[in-house]
Image (tube, rainbow, N blue to C red; front, side, top):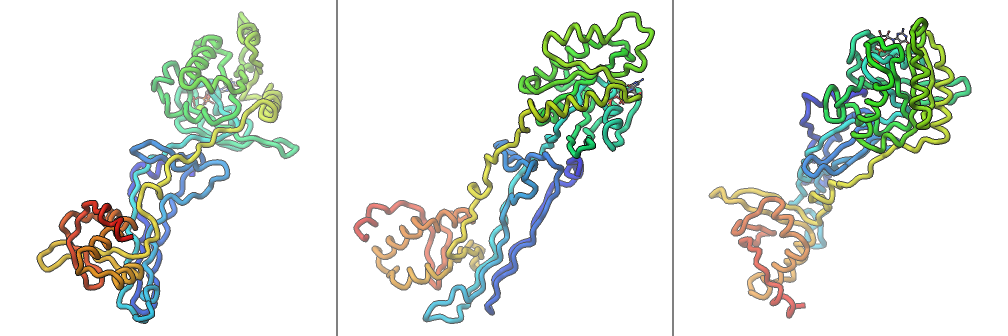
Length: 392
Ligand SMILES: Nc1nc2c(ncn2[C@@H]2O[C@H](COP(=O)(O)OP(=O)(O)OP(=O)(O)O)[C@@H](O)[C@H]2O)c(=O)[nH]1
Ligand SMILES: [Mg+2]
């Protein structure tokens, strides 16, 4: 995919539910996987914290975001020496929900920047097989275009053609931030300027203006290798002052390499491409990949519980939480719930093993009924730790 456009109007997704385990040795079916495709370079964040869940770029081409819907285990999983065919089977795991924001931050070797109409798309179409839209009006490009430059010896690199930047872009003017962020992950920048002043602007102040925007958006961008391509030299003949000489005089002392080119005739383009290749191989740093900061599994209850929780209602519509599983069965068999001491002991065990926490995850409130293999009691969370110690 090239854009995240499909997610603009379609933004609720659910994987299949895990099915209930069967009575006749059947394991419930696992929920069906839901696979969402995104363009390379997409960053997924947890919506509320903004923390990164995944950076779908580089080698990371597939990542599990939520593991959900494991099917319930069949009744034979709960067999005990005294009960070889239990009536009980496990319900499917509850679904987990997560709010995610997706942002595309392209990963390309080279980013083309410059004012609208400078000739960025013309350059891309000249050096790659990409067929971007080209026109003599500003903001022709409204989405980045990618193309691959191939050299005869098999080397090559990926170029991203960006929409034109204007003054104030770093503050959101024009297409602004939307596209500056794509430049952040490129390794070398080719700054294309209209040396022939078609739009009546001055190339030297154009270059300064774009540099200012890049610096203001993120100073790290200006630390990347930048090559200046003075474009449209095919129409320079007859101009009074030589703009190429002016650009050189202004920017060479600051360490910039200037390449006069014509994206239309191809003049000077080869030299520029070899310079870019050299920079990629010697000076450019690797693109930034983002580390995972938010781990959905740590924030949602997902453990494989050795027991199951099911919620039903009694005749009066009051919620009843049915907790069952071999461990519970075993604990009940050697605890006397009729005695106060035994009951307290059992309650503490439920708290320590996290059963209470999970009951709360399922929505239990004080006073609701808990049912375990024929035993019923009201749910209370009061801490009875002290009394418990004497029992152990
Ligand atoms: N004569 C001449 N015209 C050129 C050259 N490069 C581009 N142009 C013309 O300049 C105009 C703008 O070219 P584009 O490639 O669309 O410019 P852009 O930088 O992609 O513009 P935006 O996408 O709007 O930011 C078109 O009419 C091109 O034909 C060149 O080297 N020589
Ligand atoms: Mg363009």
